[in-house]
Length: 454
Image 1 (spheres, rainbow, N blue to C red):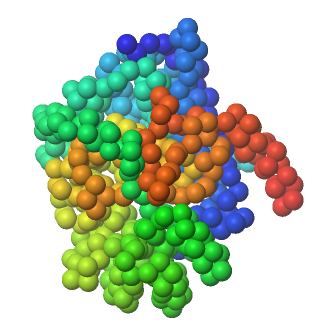
Image 2: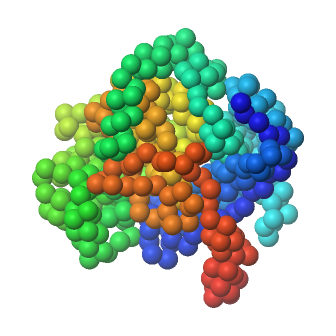
Image 3: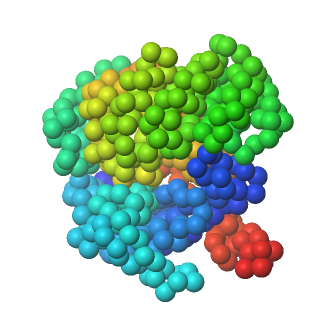
């Protein structure tokens, strides 16, 4: 039975200077500092139970997400965990439907920055932007608390989902039916995950800012480590893409899987033209070829690239379950990429996993960021065991960055995710890491900012 009243919420701005090594660089994000708004929920439970949640950011603006977390804090403070999860759908809707925070026009959040306030035009909501990222951080912490206490049955899981706006394609009854049907064979799939793990692909070899020598070195090491699926960043320069894709295809050979990621760089006609040129390298998919909001644009690209054998993958920047619903309805993607922080935590990801199952689209989650691998491992393994019951055309992203800062880091064996053995959502960071990398007062940032004269 879920227990404990939430007595305190703290939110920290934790940043890692990954831009110094061009880690995470792509055609649209040339200097990312992998960061997180890190939330801790304390309770009055006798065992001192705490929940930890994160939401992924790229440096600047993390303080705004922290500010939004604090703005949402009254919704969770002094609430009993049993009451929260007893009506989790209602609690989710309470967070996402705050009548003032969800209003999408210019608003102002007080933040501890050089500005007295930060204007956020069109980024408050509803169910998108800063507040939805903050919602994910809080809900991820709630799931961490709950997962440390008890298991879930199909009816309990479906009760966590807000079916508002998606009931035209997925009802609660259909969700329960999918989950109940997949009880058959569940033990065998659990055993398969424990022995073999969930297939992964690597993005760590071919960030756009890496030199050719670095790319070759990392590809060589990955091949020795048993990796067979590779993703390369593209989109900034056609000729450079041709050269780099040729280089990586030569290194990995014709039999291994190659994916490409443009990170929203192109217009629709440009995406089709660019990928027609890169088709010779046999990519399985092109990821985020255009604006994440352009559903019909993705559909047009999908139709144009189908004869070339290239699928479209997207989802890491999708605001919410409604966008995913429309992408599925429009047949605009062949690979669906959930994100554990962009959506409203497990609650909303459950709805998207179930919709993907109904439409027969494989889920290949985004995990290119601090803590995302730790989070998403739970979702993909759950998807295989309880929702999709299939590994066909399915794999999960993996980046070999920053896992050492987590108390329960992800385990990779033979290019596969192994199931986590510790209870919870694997979100707790090491105290020394939080202290060292907290922005702007942690040791690392005080030195960097001083060196930059700030």
